[in-house]
Image (cartoon, rainbow, N blue to C red; front, top):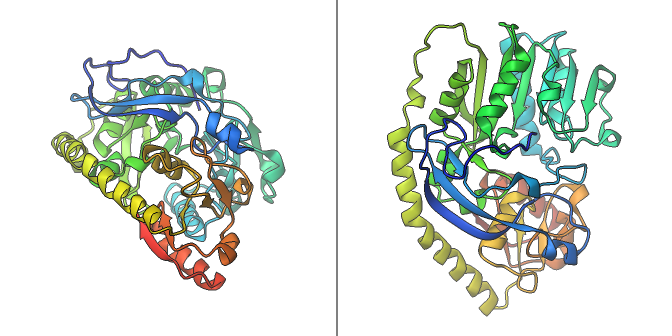
Length: 399
């Protein structure tokens, strides 16, 4: 990851056009959602910032115009991994196999920018007998038990200009670009890293903002994500920075955008049909601003009914969606004391901003909540199966 911030508040960080239109604001938002909070006091007192999402009418990019990169502290305490979910692992494995098959990733050098705990990079190196380099301050060596770990080097740092010397056949920037404010500068840096390697391919995966706007998913807006992309805005950015687009698609029930690109051949490349989305984005923006107050009212009413009826409730998913949901609706731990997560490293820690204790699914066997609010609907079947095994009969409410 990279944290330099050289863009004026109302200037688009993707195309540098002036006059971004602010359409969403949230104050007192925890500046980190998945940094491990070891006590409720630490969680409640954790620094907060302001979100003011601006839309660029020129390229369709959305950015937090009030973002302050100096507030972040990415480190080994940043617990972002989703690999404890069978649903996610199935997706990850299928994605790795597709990339290996499509780009003949056998015996190649793979560079991952923002590799987290390194699970995906290790998977590619195991399955394709590749070598690799991963860059991320959140990497934890003790958690890497892969048989391919001797073929991979990890750098515990934010990706920056000093790492543009890293050369490879295949570059990955997966669930990282949304954390970068100066996106044009960052993607340009990746292009400089590739240099004259015309056959090198870059794989990007990012959240799909069209999904967020269409579903009025305010819980998918949080401080770490300072940049929000549609299919059109991300491809326009990549072309502007010297890439040609090889593939553009959605994944994970449309929640993610996946883009494969290569250094530009120097000729004008025809736009893909999915790129022509500016009118659609304007329409989705209007829908979001109209429906957002209504959505808040519905959730506030539902939570008040839980309180009035003295029902026990928990959220399932103690990550960024959960933090955003709880803080936006001001759900205090006295009302909802617990959040459930399958990641064992989160257990016994607390939700930033609101202080709920994070517990394992097994905790519910005794607690027996009346209502479980599922932060991501894609995990509903997996959660239902776990609850059946535990003998928990709760009402499930999905976002």
